[in-house]
Length: 318
Image 1 (spheres, rainbow, N blue to C red):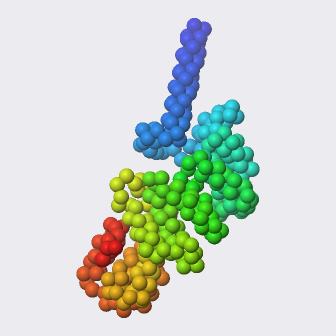
Image 2: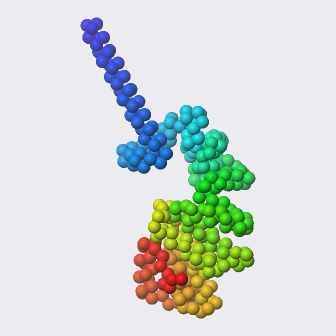
Image 3: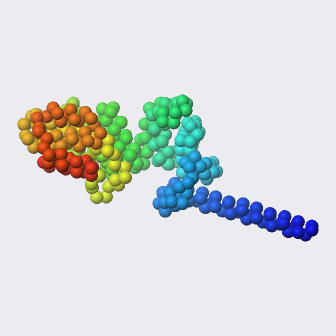
């Protein structure tokens, strides 16, 4: 009897040991997949989507904390960045997020620099409303410091943002310089925004040393065509930016029509405003109504096709 009891005990212990060993192995495998996915491995990202789709964002956040906290404490700047993101997004703890982002940024992590810049452009709120802005307290100097550092290290998104900020500060020479540097990017949204702001610089008559109407129009046309260019990463294409730029172009062609009474400019203006209106800009409808143009069925057919495909083809090209 005692022998049977001992055997049962051994079997139970072996079963528990095997189960714990298997669970630890599965846990380690998942940790490796999550970290590989975070570091950009597409196969790992696909594995998470296909095989671990049942895991909730909160569960993944806990897994990431388990993976990255020990590595962050050892000085791994990628792990420090992940911990900053964890505390910012899941713990609503801006002090810890700021601490880890600073550690990571000091180690050269550009993404951490950009998150710091964002954090210093937003005031902290503890309302419990996750959609409300949450940051580290408004600090323009710190925001500029980290943004410039990220841009200086070659991050095109940061370059574009720096260019836009200098545009708002009316330092157009510096803005132009950073915007042209941002055009190294293959990211569709970054390029759209960059060309958009260059178009604004060259299209403002108040900026006499830069004003060039033809160049401004060319920049807007380039901006709106980015989605259709070979080699551009279109995943970040932004319909709202498309709508804004179409409206800017509508203003350009409407102004040209007012000066010249050229019917080609008139039709281009109506087309641009239509593209803007049907992609979300309600004001553009009134702009169309203010123009002396009778919309035809062929116009509607062209617009419907272009809006559906998010394509942009002027009736009369430059």
